[in-house]
Amino acid sequence: MDKDTLSEWSDGLIAINGHLGSSIAYHLCKFVDDGKQEHWDNAIEEAAWHAKTFKHNKKGEPRFYIELQRHGVEKQELINPHLIRLARELDLPLVCDNDAHFLTQKDWEAHDTLCCISMQKQKSEENRLKYSPELYVKSSEEMESLFSDVPEAVANSALIAERCK
Image (cartoon, rainbow, N blue to C red; front, side, top):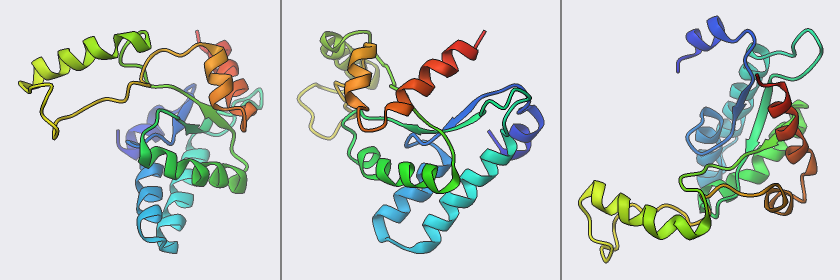
């Protein structure tokens, strides 16, 4: 979604940004790859734009959160400390979330098989798309354990859920 559309329709929305497909992560991945300050500065600029566009509501509640995910995806794990640093520097709240492609961890094998069928691949092929087995719906206890170092991120996910209708 482009920034003009986000600006036009941001009222009343809660936004999160930080997963690998996000604009902030794009810049942080480049920063992790080469350490150039310009990439960090671009990530800061992107986060600041989102914070301004999704400013606090009339009740003073935040509407923009820096998102953390922990699925065992290497690149995400590499940018997570930078996402935390960015949130701290800009005084933005953190939120954890969990992509879910299947219901339970036991369902990974069936999901993997369905992906192979849809992509016309053999399970034995090494260079095929494989989703992390961690992409299942986790319990609140699992999420609390995964994010024990940033308990506010867990608390904020519950606060967001309470605000949604």
